[in-house]
Amino acid sequence: MDEALETPTIDDEMEQRLERWLVKFNNNLQFIFYVAEVDHGYLVGWCRGGQAIESHKIVDHETYDCEIHNIFLCKQYQHRGIGYELWKIVWNDILVSFQPKNFIVWSVDKQQTHQFYSSLGGVPKEKRKFDEECTLTAFVWHDLRFLSVNMVWNNIGDSIDVTQVSKSIVDDLNLVSERFIIYLPLIFLIFGFIGFIGNIFTYLQAELRSNTCCIYSLCGSIIDIMNLSLNSFPMYLAAKYKIYIPWYTSRITCKLDVFLLVFLPHLSIHFSVMAIIDRFACTCKLTSPVRRLNQLKMVPWIITIIIISSCLASIYSPILYYLVNKYSCISTEPQLNSILYITLSGVMQPVIMLIFVLLTYQNVHQCHRRVTIREVINNGQFFFFVFSLTNNCCYINNVKSFYLSLLTSHLFRKTLIKGLIEILPRHLRSQYQVSQIQPSMATITRIRPRDISKR
Image (cartoon, rainbow, N blue to C red; front, top):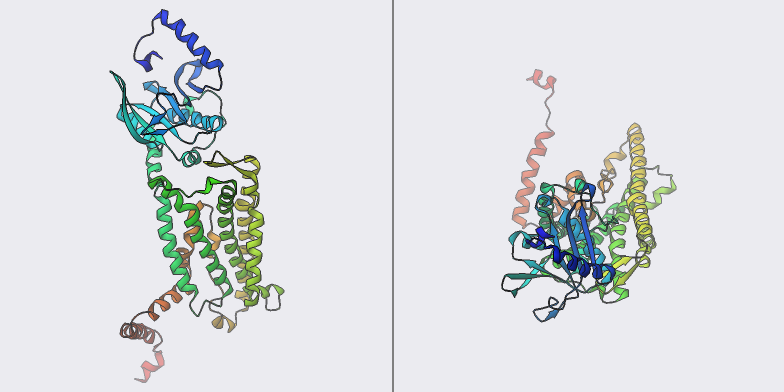
């Protein structure tokens, strides 16, 4: 405490200070207090927060509900992530106990302290002189939901083991990551939109528009861009420009937001699974009933079944979440929610993919033993299993399809290039076609030894 206040404690003041703090500690509703200690109970820091003090709560004609009253850490233990852990624990406890609409911190006038609050999403609002020697800067938070999502809830005790906290280099890397991650949703949307246009253009070409696998891939691409637009891009707008979609104005919109957050990614992967199953059906025998899946008349029914099954697999999310003070949706059963999500999205879909990829590989391997002239006719039958590379790296999954198809599928590249040539002006189109004919004529010319002997 003396190091924090930069003044030694007088013995006479110690008793008065203890009496004053004991009254505060006995009133659990007044504030939240956490300490950080090392082995043998040596105190190295603390953080206190709660309802905003009357003289602190009004800034720029706006009233703030709660604040972090003070946070301190001994110098030799700074830059190790301990301050961040203290802040995170107190912040989450305040959200649960007081359910504030906004948040404020009055910071001492030090550059290092200002950088710390800025890295946590705080916005400097006002400088105020409380006495002749004390000038503080107000940092405010309005989007408590955004920060609470990035701060993962940790059910740990009142003390922190310093030996297990990351070192300064890790803390610096975390700061760089936070500043970079803000722009990831925008990057994903740009590349996702380019891929969406490429998929639409390619899959609607005459060669592929009647291919059932391409129809499912096209549907998955549409869901991908919807997911990026509704779930990913709003995070960039909130972090960069403080623009928020009003999902948390009512209980219904809150549950709808959570449902879309689970439903759209699940539906996208479900279409990828169906594309793999469709390729498996292509490799089955002509007499197999599974071949019926490749019929165009089956596509509307299968798409309907996919949508309904994804709805049923995602319906648990709005049931387990509820609105808290119009700033966040919180799960009533976090463990059950995690188990259902991991099982339905993280385990079941990849396992189904893997099973049908292996079955398809087995069928293709057997087909190599009975190759006939049919191989020339069905040159697009052995489509590369692009979607088997699906991973659960969040929104990267919604960006990958076009680029992986472009890299791995010869049929996809051929159709895309042909479609691009079609939209060129006529004089350029004819020149390109002539340049393509010349090498192909050379490749079919072969001189045999007996021709040379005749000469």
